[in-house]
Image 1 (spheres, one colour):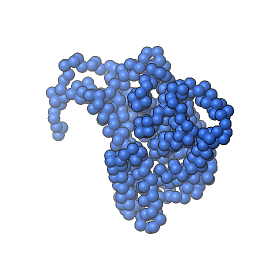
Image 2 (cartoon, helix red, strand yellow):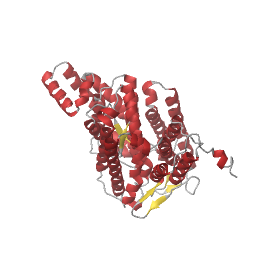
Image 3 (cartoon, one colour):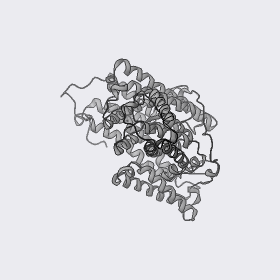
Image 4 (cartoon, helix red, strand yellow):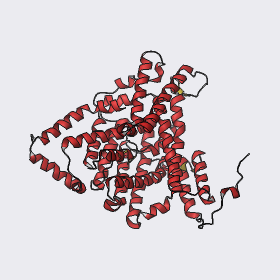
Length: 496
C-alpha cells in the first residue's frame, strides 16, 4: 500500500513542497508567514511551546506521519464495507478537531479504530438494519455517534472527579480481557477473507461445498501465507520505518504478487477485481452517508467506546513519555477525551469509522525526534486531500481479500496479544477466583454470542462482555491481601 499512498499524494507533495520552498526563500514574503503564524497561534495556542520548523521540513515530516497512519486507516473501511475516501476524510478532520480541543499541544494523529470492526461488520451487510448498504451504514453511524457521546460523558466525569475514577471503573482485568476479545472476535473475519468464495449472486460458499473452487482456495492460501509471513519477518526483524510499516509493505507486496499471478494466468482471475479502478474518476467526492439511529446498532457499537477510552488514556501517557510532557495535566485528559469524542461523532455524521489516537504516529515521533504537532496537522491535511483522489481509492478498493486476510492474521492476533500483555504487565492475579470469574464471564458472553435485550435495544458480543465485566468488578468484593483462594483448590486440574 506504500506505492498507493505515495502515488496518490504526488500532486499534493509537489504543491506543498513548492509552496514551502517559496516561503523559505521569501518569494511570497514575510507578510504571509506572519499571517499564517498568527492564525496558527490563535487556533493552537500551545504551538509556541515547540521549536519552529521550516515549511519544507514540516511537509516532509507530515508525509512520514501520513504514511504511518495510512495502513490502519484504510484497512478499517476495507474490512467493514465503508468508503475508504470517507475514512481518510474523517481521520483528517478528526485530527484537526482534536488539535483544536487540546490547543495544539499533543503531537497526535487520529485514525480509524480497529476496535469497532466486528460490530460495524455485523451491521453493514445485515438486512435487519436496512434494505440497502447505505441504510445499513447509516444505522452503524448512529452507533458511532453514540460512542462519541460516551467519550464526552467520561470527559465530564474526569473533569469533575479526576482520572482516578477511570482506573476504578476499568481495572486491568477488564481492560486486558476487553482488548483480547476485540482481536479474538475478529479472527474469524481474517480466515473468511482467505477461504470464503461467492457465487455470481453474492451468496457465500463455505470450503468444500458444492460449487467451491479448489484452485482458488489453494492460491488464496498461498498468497495469504506469503503476506502473513512477510508481515511477521518485517515486524520482528525490520528497523525504523520498515518495522513501523510492516503491514502496509506486506499488503503492497501481496497486492503486486496477486496482480502478477492473475494477469499471467497462473492463479484464477477471481482472486482479484481490478475493474473497480475504472469505476472511479481521477477526482471525486467521497461517498458520504448521513446517520440514522437504531437502538440495536447503538447497543452493539457504543459500549466498545469503554475499551477505546482506556486505550486513549494509555496513548496519551505514552505520547507524553516520548515528548517529555505531562499531557494529563495540560491540557488534561478531559480535553483529550473531548477531542477524541467530537472527532468520532463527526466521523459518524459523514459515514466514516470511529476515530482513535494512533500509537503508530507516536512511534514516528520517537524515531524522528521531532515533536512539533504542526507535522501531524499537515498529515491531517494530506489525508483530506487524498480522500478526493478517486483512482487511488479505486486501487485500494481492489485489494484482494486473501491479501487482507493474510495481513489480518498478524494484525488481529496482535490485538488479542496486546490484551494478554496488558494482563501480564499489570500483574493481574489469576490465582484469585474473583479475577478468574470476571474474565471467564466476559470471555463466554462475548465469544458465545450472548444477547441481552429485545428487538428494539440489546447488548451483545464485545459490548455485553465489557459491560458485564465492569459491573462484576464493582459488585464483587475484592480479595483481602493474602486471602486469595488458589484456583487449584476450587477446580480440578483437568476437565474430562
